[in-house]
Image (cartoon, rainbow, N blue to C red; front, side):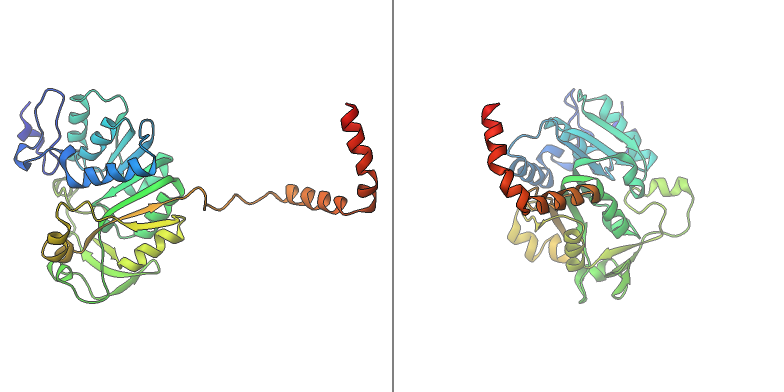
Length: 300
């Protein structure tokens, strides 16, 4: 099949027959710095045991990352709203032998419909939403362990990135500080489907200010909130003259630590029973009968 007919624009995926979906990229998805950074992260958090862990790539574009996750043995789901991108995902699925890889044609704003996952991978999507906090709340409720956000952020002071993308003045949305970005005008669904790298229903999106995004991740239950830098092949170069200062894009990680997670609240009936037992243990009758109870246990 002619790859140009599929119109791959971003993901150069190695298929089982040796062909690639976008050879002009120069490297395949398994060689992508972000892919490798994510693998290092997951192997450390899950102590090398990735097989069987569930992951969803929200706004998966052409399915490149989702495919690599499945190659690591993970139960991988890619969610994509655009019909043209989704068709590319299905093409990839049909040309790789990966039983744990699946794709869903759906909207990221409906993320709560698709169930729980150990890992949420959100790459290049958050900054296309006009209600990013609601999206993050739904993600947090359905995330068992790790949220990975590769996203643009905003800053209170003017930046080169804010100028490049013509961001608004600092504003507030959903209780968060940030800046607005204009996505597209009123256009038909057919034209919108061809705009592969823009928002879907909303005509403008909200870029959350970095410190507010870090805080909301913490507030939503991710005990560890980190920034990962090894997604850049040359950290010094990228942070001084590359994309990091020019387009204000970062890779943030939220991890739910089981040791720190709050325990579920005890039902009222159990609380009452616990209090009654505690009161009984302090009573005179309990202390008097304790030796008899011990003797009974020995005789049994």
